[in-house]
Length: 352
Image (cartoon, rainbow, N blue to C red; front, side):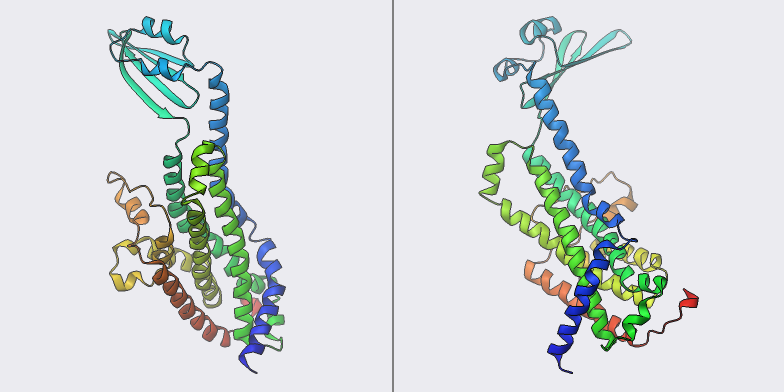
């Protein structure tokens, strides 16, 4: 049988398996992982919309807020700006403290008083586009790549073979008139298609959830500049992670019975990637996919515990072309090992 015929067989198997990959009863929690960051940004956007609408009714003018200076009294500021949106009063020995909140509809200004004299002014935008894009980059790199896609691929690809073993249906595929390696490739392609769609759409939904509550002028400028490229590379990084992690978990599903053991080992390997020698870093999927992220994440605070810093330390960046070649190399190597393993696979449902 020639290569073209086996490829057609693999694509046919993938078409038959893709529904199972999307709607496996053991994998519906994957959708929750894919959509969780979007829900967070959506909730933040609703909060921003509510603040703008509620605070605009009693908003002070920008010119009035700009005239406020330390040393002014509480009564003087209240006569000038009116009642604050929020106020808080407490006492500390002989000193009285007050915290008042004002807004001009686009920013919130917190005033701090000691003994009714203004001692501090804290101003920030209700929605800061640059800050929110950095938060998106941080959530994507530290949650989406390291946890959501990692465990999502665990759920999708482990079930391609282990799920059929538990359902006692795997022997039907092994009795089919196709080589076992072809069956494996077909199942892998189905898993890749499902995971790329789920997490690609989840990435896009998270990206647009950050956009919808921002200043329209800033958003238009962003879409006219780096916005489309940023969206493309976020989705590309998610897709590449699905390809790499998918091959690893597919192979693990063929080689071991308990998916927890390889998942923990791989998670630790990916976590210490930034501390490994350069040669060993190239054996990590995270090393490559993180290099495609278009916006750097928030730097890790030096004060966090050493264990947390170990899990969050970023790997050294690689070029986009090297990242694509690296994931392709790791994936082909792992699939080759999986192909050798499936040739020796024997069905014994009684031990499952």
